[in-house]
Image (cartoon, rainbow, N blue to C red; front, side, top):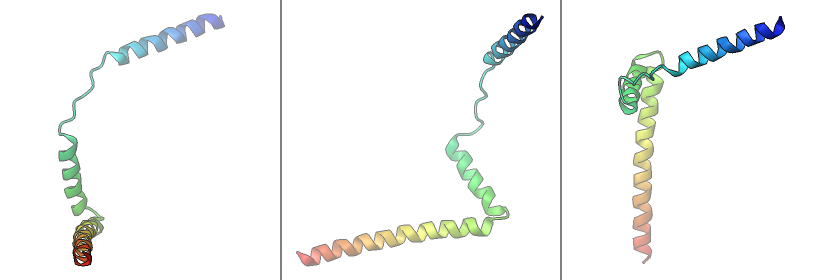
Length: 81
């Protein structure tokens, strides 16, 4: 009796697996870059909008400081020569 139940269970699992394999994968409606940009805009309007804006500002300041530091290093190297 147990073997019939086991066989039936295996047949059921095989049928479910076969049914799942035939489905087509849904294509994304937008590319990843567009979705990321839209998510960022939504996050600015949400509960953590202030923090998201502050983070963007800090990233901009980081880039500016890195640029100024690099220019300063290059100038010091030029003066040393």
